[in-house]
Length: 367
Image (cartoon, rainbow, N blue to C red):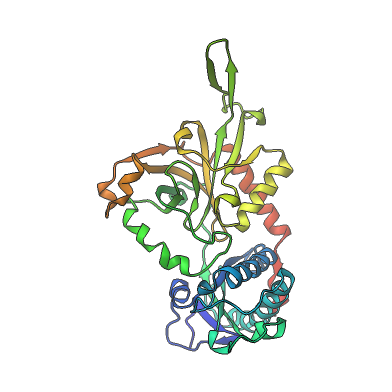
């Protein structure tokens, strides 16, 4: 019997074991593309579910075409390429079928209230693929398995100090960053030896200066805009004061562009849309640690916590020190922000949650 807090389904069939493992165990056991969403408003809806399905289909297509070893337990080239429209149709059909079977069971058998975290993993079953046969829409449906892991989730309260993020820059960016895949849990484990005490998320950088993203989050800063005043023999760099929020031209939100090798996070895209709609200056450029004195605020995003304000960021004094086997052997520099989320961070978070209600996918659609 599934536990009251966790459920696991394979192609819509529940695993009736005495103890359903945590989601990390599932992801480490199977290759594939995955996405994680959660419910909102007392399980009445799923946050940005349709966006999650689109990203899941895109991740599956990318892995199938360019990195089959991350989708199947094999690096054998796949026999044919399929357009994105086919993947959208296949993934939506497979996931809808699993959700329609799983959600009624979860809502009926769980014993605790609160929200639900739902992870959907699409994994290639290579045993069902024989020879170099053509793979059309019907065949691709037969060689993919869909795992659903559902567990209880208590969303952290935004803005509370104990829920702030403490970050450290520790290692290089991901391979195939445009796709979200389960093998990343295994590949990022070596970075854990460099996690300083109390740090809640690890940041990725290829050169120690341009910060790309977190291991499980996208990374943003609110940065003072810099203006250069040129004189006859020299130039002076001046920063306008951000403390006067009456003028939005004094700052900009920065986050690394997808072309730098970052995950196209669901909440990342929504932050961009919110900034555009509200007239908040935003530039897709990797925040530079060498200019961190200009950072007034920072926050990270993912689909479970949505947004967390950052309290501290640590980075090694020299990039070469990360060759050490222990974080204690590294000399760290620290950037500390004012306590609590900044004004821009708070405004964006409020707009995201309002957008979440508008784009919530009704759970009743699965019942």
